[in-house]
Image: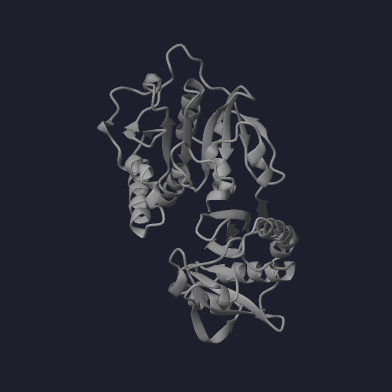
Amino acid sequence: MTEPAYPAARAVAIQVQQHFARHLAAARACGFTFVGAEPDATTIEAMIDAAFWASLRREEGVTPKISLAWLPPSQAAQPLTFARSLPLRPAPLARLAPAVERPGIHLGVWSDNGELYVWGTTRDVPAFCLVVEVVTSGLIVVKHRTDPFGKFTNVAVLEGDQIKIVDEAFSMTPDCPGPVKSLLGFDAPAAGTGSVDVLVLLAASMRAHGRGGALLVVPTDTNAWQESIVTPALYSVDPPYMGLTDLVTREAEATSHEWQEDLRRAVDAVAGLTAVDGATIITDRFALMAFGAKITRRRGNPPVEKMVVTEPVEDAATIIAVPSQLGGTRHLSAAQFIQDQRDAIALVASQDGRFTIFKWSPTEDMVHAHRVEALLL
């Protein structure tokens, strides 16, 4: 390596190694056979180090975006193998980046006589396979899948000298919302949605469009939420759009590529509406009711003055904050909506990539703001 060591890689390596050792042992004890190889701390440090320095390079002025997976070619389904393996170095990784930047493509990394090398590419990785992804310049995410076909779960996020280790125990805290549990790898989808957490998909898509937005999830069996919306809403939907609802009821087809593509398009279509100024409103059964809606304080209710703010990462402090400390008008109006409509959930994306899930906490007797951008990268 011609670059100096990346200190954060060494600082996080042992904790990440312990995470994988713990989960792989539990998976094998439960009878899982198609699981990833257990990485040691030296391998984890080297993969993060190479990914970090590669992310600081430029290929034709573009930041490399790559995903490294720790597995031998024999564990990959239909691997694309190079005739000559490449050393795990920043320069070769940056040169390869344009060919592998699309989602779902991983560069396979393995070792030979103590030397790490890149053997080719794969689209399939086993459960609990170590994956190190470059999100953007200097921003690295360590993750894995809990099963070979499920979503990825983040383990650690490194940005420069900042390290965030995801706190798995957060899912056990009182009033933890279902989408947060799902992002932490403890799936708790809404009723009728099987193993697919549509709110997580919507959150990821909202964050991806980069324009910021607010999504309000209201109960199906009541119209009380309308008391917190300026009527008529600018873009009311009549009758409600049931595209997502219809797909969720057909989840028996979830292994079908066609169903997955249909779901992705429907999620992106609804999430795209959140880019319009105002809030998008769906029911807890994913029927689209309106978008561009203006939130107002429910008549007779007090303004929201404070909220509890947490982030599901280790050593993150729980704070009591006023809404203005968390963001602008979008965050304030979402917090007010949840204070007035305590059986609803609000998802708010900022243009800078921050993402917050607002939910009423009976335990705290106030609005609870869950900062989850570290889980959505």
